[in-house]
Length: 157
Image (cartoon, rainbow, N blue to C red; front, side, top):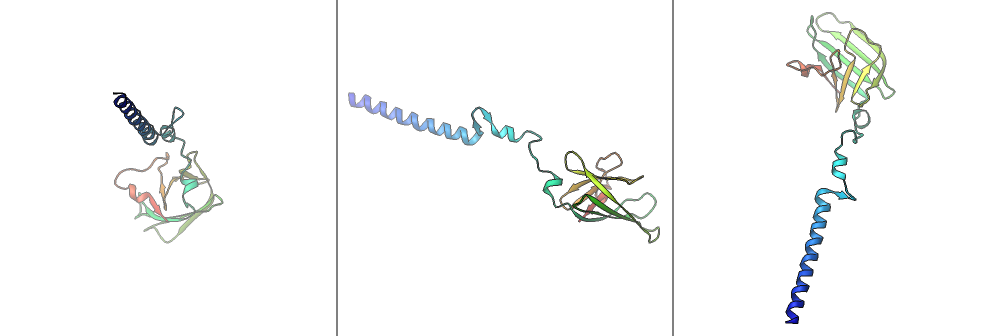
């Protein structure tokens, strides 16, 4: 009788011990709880990720495309960004002659590190969204252009 009670007690301790270790391991692996802090939730908090276009992409280079034009066939646009925060923008109005307009200056990044503003330009959009090998011209208010012509505002490297 004592052997049976001892065997049952020992089996219970072994089962309970294995079950407890499994729960602890499962809890640590599945929820990443450590010292009462859910580290997965902390990782998902907006603003914790410091990666952005400015510090993560190879944004320096020349971007080209043909943007829409109200009174011509399109505007051949070429923007060159350099790592010293300067730019050269060349535009040619298709169907309006061969003259290429060239402007130079400096640019600055927004606080999020995703948009740039070409400084010193007048009467034209000056803001661009920087993407992977793309530069998307934004409207006069700094918003992405939507609709059927949206793809026409993307310059490619």
